Image (cartoon, rainbow, N blue to C red; front, side, top):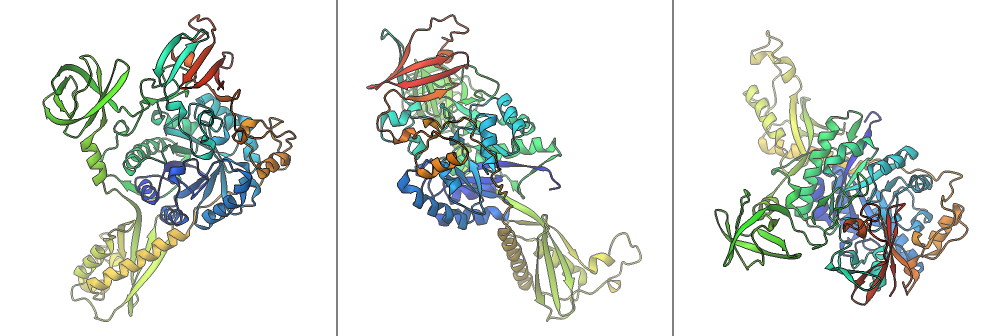
Length: 624
């Protein structure tokens, strides 16, 4: 790669089939859950599936990262280490971890990536993790481009950031709202998604200011327009969220970002894609037609309002015009979109979401499966495009690696050397038992035709060269035109050529699979010190090995992680740059609003809100 910085598109995979689709459609790496100890309990995978994904990814020089990013309790340490070693043996290229216990397990030959759950938001934290031996730091999702640049300027470690998908409204790894309402914890891979629930916003007098709204639910991230800026800021890995999403989501979103990243790479010759192969797509990707709660760049350009979706946490899809008329079982729209039976549509009317499917279309009149409680002027959304979904399901996009074939005739046998663009090569041969070909030109044509048919392999044979024959019949040599002036070719049956091709390409594939992408295993740097002195409860230390890690780096007072508590009363269960005041037009900096106490109510649960206007931060404290 001539020292060029490698750029990676990183895709989610809930299982092997999704991992394979992600690779086929252009991902340079995938991340998937281990059998246990991943932050998405419903997305765990057997070790055999991880091995299969690694074998397939390595064909293209792509990588597989395995999530072991929950915190560990003392009685889980042994099982977690066994799982980690099994995953490494299966061929994983890195472990994504939150608990620092993994850094104390003596795991060799594997990269450790610091999960976003370790709350990587400052240059000091990123540098500490770099010097502790982590190969990559996965950044907090609410950072601005200026904060990302500051982290880059202070570190050398690889930086990864989310560019698409759901956003945790809280600082990652530091949300305890789920635990305040239940025994389930986001840090244990079992979040109840309290941030997507409805709340009443009240003041200290009990007056309801907002009733039954999803006040902490934010839109989904879309930084596809910022890929070039992020490359220039030092990001090496661009991550798509969604380990619970289906294959259709992965196909569409990966294809979209593959195009965007390739466009930016064309403008930056100092950067290079991190894996090989070309994904030959058979559709035009469109992220407006895939699951989304609405699209936002969040705080990329600084703190701002308009990032929430208070009416619903569900996917509403893309806006598709306005409703102009309503009738018994039908609506009319001013949209120029083409609708079809089976499409899903929805509206938000009076602050309430309602949706249905289309049964029949007549011009701009849409006959619906059930009545929609809407009025003329309401915005219509399409949250399911039946035609696009059918096209995605039928898509058979292949990812191919360009290769060439060189044919050598040794007298007793015909040998073919298959070479790929990465310099790998494999040789296959067939015995010559049927004498010379009667028609050398026709035999040469047959060789080119049969050796170019790479079938369902990952290779695309772009060139077939026949030594001796091609050399002496070159158009540049006008004196060699008669068949008698060129080397005669042996007669080889088509069936034998097909078998030879299959053997050679199978060998080449095995060579590529065995060539594991290079790993970067840095050693912890001498003199590294934990930059914040004492370790707070929010660092989630819940076992002796994690405590030992921080002691090794100079921490003296190490608080127990909050997940060890049974009662969250009085705990700041969320701290976030998202601000309910700002989002609802009550910012004390700009609106002159009086700083009255504010509370969130959900059922029997009550939370007090505190606002740090200097830092532009909001804290949520559980009151019981």
